[in-house]
Each structure stands twice: as structure tokens, then as C-alpha cells.
Image (cartoon, rainbow, N blue to C red; front, side, top):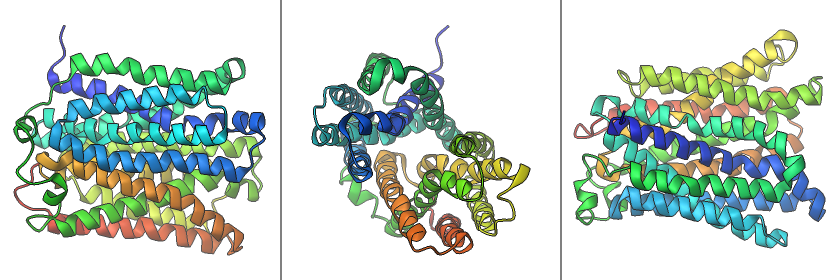
Length: 398
């Protein structure tokens, strides 16, 4: 039985995000093996991590804009080919510099796949279901990190870090024929297919009074990712400092992401009727819980993991709804561009968040002040997203 086009594109998009989520975090899983083989310092490994995120930020903006101008499907295929090929080449790196360059270039493809597949999914969904459909498709991203992490942990001792890169590259390349034969551009993309809009997509994001909405939306995504990646990077350290065994503390990152999956799924049903305010409410509640962690009262006993799960549900769940909110706020003709710009802003936040966390920890502010500060970006993102509802042009459709 043949799937309806909207279900087919959502199904393919889910697997694209599954591979993207795994490939993005794959380096985190095998970093200890690379560091051991090449005797790398933490600073050098940090540079390798940053090169991948930087490439992804550039790819999201550049390929996202190209997708609205030249077609989402061709740009998705180029992104998958770039990510898969360069990830394979990572397995043959002979030095940290080579690995850094290959990860940066593969990041271009990883970043570009997100706006392209998001715009394709939105184009096939009915106006009232676009936000929900995009959000559910994006659930593949954290699931890719969770499942991929478990698989990598089971096989990396036998295949080594080079074998893990080979597997990740092959997964991405295997999606190319699936996307090539299973996807169409979809409805509402006549401007793209016929040769591009009359003005450049980047200009369109600023035209007709959209400049405030574009800037505010990207700023809110930056703040949200800054908070998220601080939590992912430093929560285990916080728990260890408060007496939790290291092995158990590592599970906090998994619990945080599991909460995000559940949260995004729940929110996806709510945003069908109310696309903006539920996300803002989740971020406000998440900011309050983050600040509450700083008091230390819930960092012991049975409250720890349920608290972390709830924060993941609210903060990461809201984060996974951002591309769906983007396709609601902006016209279909520039959806890939705006998703790409917001993804780039998010990547910058994902780089800065852990760095700021390191500086704050070094300053020995104490956990109470530390988490009070970390709660502020989430609070600001909530207010910005709530204000976006007053700026959304009437001509934009869900």
C-alpha cells in the first residue's frame, strides 16, 4: 500500500533527522577513543567539536537560502551527499587538523539538511497541521542521539572510532535514493520550482515588516539553544558536585533528552490549535525549574532525575518545536531560509552556551547564582516568542 505524500515525506524526514541527530553527536561518543589514540588535549578536542558546529551553522544558513531559491529536494540531496561523503573521509583522517576540516565540511551538509527537509514537510502538510507535522518529524533528531549513542557504546570497542565514522557516513548516503525517489517539492512551492522568487529569500525575510520578527525569532532561538547546551554539557558535573556517583550522573543527559522527546510529542498536539503561546509557557516554566535547581533543595534523593526529565520536557521539548513555529510564522516561500537562519543562530548558541558555563564555573559563583543566570536566556526566549504572536503578519499561514 502506497503512503500518502504527506506521510511519505514525514517518514523520510524522520529518518533524515534520525541520521542528522546521530551524526551531529557521534563525535561526542567516540571522543575518548580519538583523544587516546592521538594523545589530544581537551582544548584540541574542543576545537574539533567547534569546527563541526561552525560548519553546521554556515550550512543551515547557506543551503537553507539556496533551498528556497533553487528547490528544497535538490538541496536536501546535496546536503546528504556532502554529509555522508565527508563523514566517511573522517575515518581516514591522519591528524587532528584533517579531522577538523572534514568535520567542518560534513557539518555544512548536516546543517543544510534541516531547513530543506523542514520546508518539504511543511509544503506537503495542510495549513492547520504544518507546525505539528514538522515537530513530529523532528523527533527523529533526539532519538537519533539516544539510539545512536546506545549502538555506538555497544560496538565502538570492536570497530573503533574510524568504523563508527564509516557507519555514520553510510547511513547518510543510503538516504539519498530514498529521498530521490520518495520526495516531491510539494504544494505551495511554485515560486521555487519555476526559477526562484522575484527577490532574494534573504531580502524577503526582511520585507513587509518581517525584519523585527526575523531578528526577534533568531534571538529567541539563540537564547534557547544556549540554555539547552549548557544543561546538556554541565548537568552531570553539577550532580557529581552534589554527591551523585559519576556513572549515575551521566544518565542525566539521557534523561534530559528523553524528556525532550516526550515534551515535543505532547506539545505537537497542542500547537495544532495554539501554535505560539504553549511554547512560551513551557519556556517560562522551564526557566523557573532551572532557577529552582540552583537552590539545591531538589538535587538529592528521589527528586533529581524526575526534575531533570521535567526540565527536558519543557526546555528541549519547546526547542524541538521551533522549526514548526518557524513555518507557522513565515510564508512558505521562505520557510527553508528562515529555518536555516534560526538553526544557525541556534548553533552559535550551542557553541557559546558550554563556553559561558565553563567561565561561570571557573568564577566559582555558587550553584544558586549559576543556575539563576542560566535561567535568564530561557526566560528571555519565552518573552520573545510570546511577543512574536503580535508581529505575525496575517498573510502567513500555518
